Picture 1 (cartoon, rainbow, N blue to C red):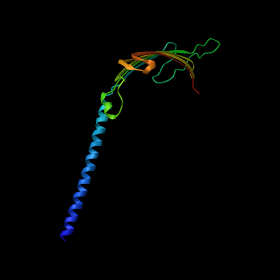
Picture 2: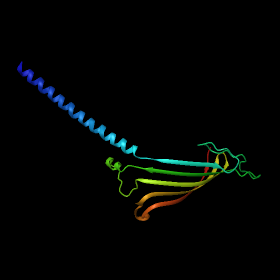
Picture 3: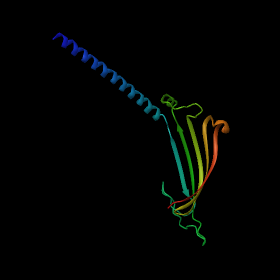
Picture 4: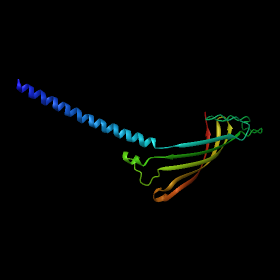
Length: 162
């Protein structure tokens, strides 16, 4: 009988040690996930938009404009919409703890844009936008781009929805 008692105690000891190891690994994973959650919480995006119609159309938030006088050769010019947007985003430098390479990148960006949308009909529009992004410090755009603290661009598009 003594032999069985020693064997049972050794087995129980090994199982307890194995469970402690698994518990420790689980606690480490939970701690890493909590750090990731905290880093993501520190990312503070902000966004403000303004759109308004210069013609007689009513503009509802997040909807397209339906021109009162759609574009046609008889004199309808469609609808003109102005749009302004300011957005800011910051990320935590703790993202480097999760394998994200931060070298040469900015931790904050502020973007301002303004544009004009010409709605020829409800399903056809032409958009022209000017966008400026400020990186709050110089970042590297590679050999062809060099170092810049801000960039300005122009975008235009013709869109047909069907």
